[in-house]
Picture (cartoon, rainbow, N blue to C red):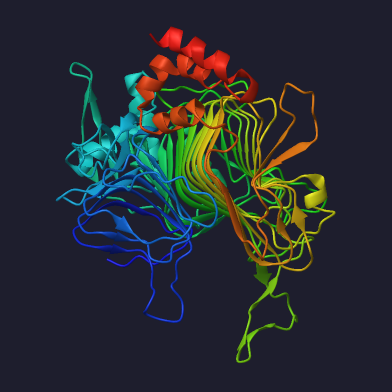
Amino acid sequence: MRWAVSQAAPLRRLHIKNQLRLHHCGFGPSCMASGGFMANLVVGGKVDFGSQQQWFTRNVELKQGVEGGAWNFVFVGSPGAPASSFQKGDHKAISNISRTPVIAEKPFITIDPDGRYTLQIPKVQNNTVGATLRLTDAPVQSVPFEEALGSIEEVVCKTMKAGESDNPLEKEFNMMKRAVGAGVPAFDCRLESIVGSFQCKALLLPWKQGFDPFAALYEVYVARESDATAKIQDKLDAALHVVLTPGIYNLTKSLVLSQPGQTLLGLGMATLMSPSDGSPCVRVAGNVPGVRLAGMMLGASVPAAGIKPGSLIEWGTIVDEGQFDDPGLLFDIFARVGGDAAEAETGTVLKINSGNVIGDHLWLWRADHAKLKPGEAPGWLSPTKRSQYHVVQSSEAKAQHGLEVFGNDVVMYGLQVEHFLQDQTIWYGERGRTFFYQCELPYDVTQTSFADKGYAGYKVNDSVMNHTTYGVGVYSFFRDVQVLVPTAVVVPNKPTVHMVNVFSRFLDGYGGIQSVMGYFGDGLSGQHDLVKEGTPALKSSPTDRLPFGLASEGREIQDLISEMNQSRSNEDRSGAVRSMCLLPRKVWALLSCLLCSCLWY
């Protein structure tokens, strides 16, 4: 099987019997490979990454191993994956985490032999290894699209009965009045007061377009792009799951999910365009566990005059810690600011306020090109081919950040954030974990507007005490002018902030990135200037890596490697001890390790 892709083209829930080739080298002028995501697969043959720059793999059974690949590869819970490699310089980095600490697979739809549809919502699991392809492999909530009640008479009568008064005479009168008045197939339903049941006889009347007598029976609503925003919201407010069929949904208000366990699932790149009043496409209410957003493209719209948009998704409230055993989840969420309209704008694409939220494949993108304006002449792509787009300038497609995380215990698998005008990703919450990060800095900024303000590809706020990432790559292509960014990643220099296999890469253009990682002071000397670690990534030397971030040599590094091979339950059991073992950083190394040895035994 060939799957030569870049971002926003995931592979999920498949059994591939033979080889999986993730590139197109040798079959055209381009290898067609710039990074991707796969999860919950069984691959019987070898996986050939070929020229893929980077890739994230989760819960994939690799029966014949892997080959190829260029820069950054992260495997989580994937038996058969290669061992971790921790090399400096211009070499491929591999981060292999043996178990997936916490995840639920993406919701999906099944069809039974009778043609009935069911929304399958896999439940959360911990410390998983390998794929769960069959419904019996893992716990799942099965939600029918409608109840199977037998005859049409039973369905309509139950619908008419729903929500009526307890008075039998009023119930019968209202039922018949509503049915006849709406012009639907009414039924001569007689309430038998002794047994409390309906006996129905069809009175065949014509359907009235738009009236749905079965609405009270649905558990899943299937939306179409022609649906008004208010109609979709009514279904969400009625605690239904909603499936968005392919199309472009021009929202007039935010879609708000306020019911525990609710799912909003998009099919075929269903696209939600943000309201012109600056509100998000989707808002998840606070203190609502178990919500799932999946399979959607989010688009920033052109805001109304005088409006400053906030975000495209806003999740919860800062005071909401969420639930460890019932987290919120995002699957295959892709966002773009610009591309179709240079005047499109937002503030932050995704803002996570609540705790215990999991992202499973996110690509958040500020456009580097936009459609030509009326009367604008196309540029040349080559001596024979003209472009239907123009390159974006910093005054266009305005967006400050891709991701802001305020909640605690937020986990990201396969996170990609590109081209935003300030910090690409900022993390304020505690105990955040990122498994794979790919970031391309904006093309269209200047030294003054970007680098001199200290913006970076990945930033953890200095107040954070605990944070972990595996496989972080930040790239530069400053298209127009010389820009020298001080550092790719900014984190606190604290013993429980762990960064494994971090690198920066010069792609093209001018300038580059002056260091891989930086921090402000070391907490001992009172130093407050930016301390840089790693060498510059420039045209002359395009790549540098810090395999263990700011960790010192010796026991601390061994502990980092051990953590990659241990389950979440083990982390919970001995986390406090290991955190003390991670205290050593230069001055405290000997004291800390002696203390850990005493506690361990």
